[in-house]
Length: 442
Image 1 (tube, helix red, strand yellow):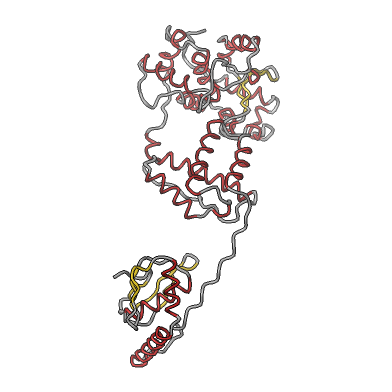
Image 2 (cartoon, helix red, strand yellow):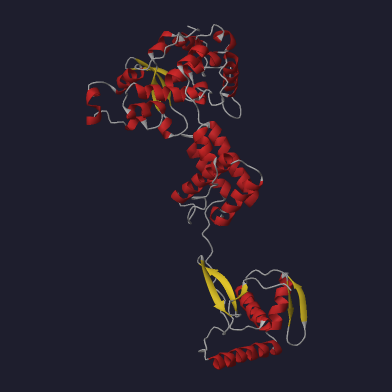
């Protein structure tokens, strides 16, 4: 026989209702060991609170039966029957029997058998803007400091969420939907890094909505993620530094210029080695971003991964000697905006072809370890700069791990630099870096 939801029997054989209020379990005794009585009392409780029911069969004392109760019409019919005299009389008799049993057992009677009043209706949530409008406002702001690739990934994630849960008012979004979104990705076979990235995008969106008075509940994506071996794998499969031997294989090979036969193929790896910048940052450079400030040539990174990544990177002396500035002047004289004007940006930005070509070149020269890729230049730069003894804040400002403009060169920590301009200090720091290589393309 089908059972009413949440009707359980105690270890003493007495039936009770298990419900939840404000996240806590509440047990309400039905004070009977008789299943028929318990079922009617519980049914009355459920109908009074408009709680969801599964399919069930009900037989009333008069002999009248209703089977496969499930639809709204079925529930209305039950309500009518519960108002009939014979059912009411049965409930009264059941209550009297419970009281007699309690008296016989020496148990003080309680008021729990009284009809349970309907739960108060929660006030309607305030309405603000629909989900897609909030997404539009959020992404417009994030375009100030997110890369094109990140914006596209976020938009794709929000579109996926809206398809699943409709483009409803932002305040109608719930914790249950957030959990369902995560579980849907898991069931679709998504990998933990992908799931957690999308969940972080959703969390950031709702944090924005909360800050801007567009969402009035706690962030439903807070602390929502998938736990796995991903972090351990990341620790053991992180990018590896290039050794001096690797760097000579890459840059001293006579075939470097021939194989890396496009301007971005040629210059982006070399710039990566001496700036520690990410491949997309370099491939997307504009001519106007190569500047001279106080006599120091630099890359003005005015848009990158985040606010900390907006920075100025002095060009190392080896870069100035390499002929790079001559290339810049050639592109500028031709009237181009992009430093590498032949690149047509794709879905993932400007760096896809350069990344692929560099990977092929590594295989060609015999560097086949999977953890040695273009990003290894960034790891190499940071490690080698650290070994020069450069101040940590200066290094973090160069590579974009700390907001460069917040470095206070007037503080006691920088006593040795206080008579110099900030860009001179950064230039002096970066020129301490030396590699035992000769650039074959020079």
